[in-house]
Length: 134
Image 1: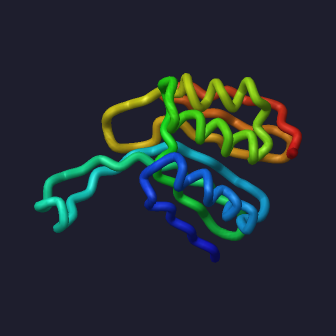
Image 2 (image 1 turned 90 degrees about the vertical axis):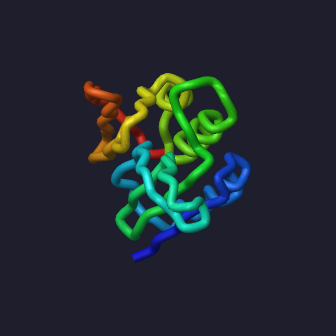
């Protein structure tokens, strides 16, 4: 099982590693989430991290530096990744720039891919869309 973790913490570092998604095979889901951890190099102070996780049949890729819910560099990188995965331009932009952006740990949004369609969970609601792989 392949596992890649991009810890570059910039959109530029994430973008230069998008090619790693190619080894995942058929994509099953993509989600934007956050969690809090404490690390010794930060005096054990809690720090919240935001990531985008791409899960395929052969493993997963986790990217830092990609964000959502505002107009900026992080969401532009997410939009680019979603288009690379075959999400149509307007839908990719909607997910990247307009998705719910919470403050608590957990998942803000999630895409689940199933034969010819995907579901999009954003905050507390879910919508279903027809999808054709790119």
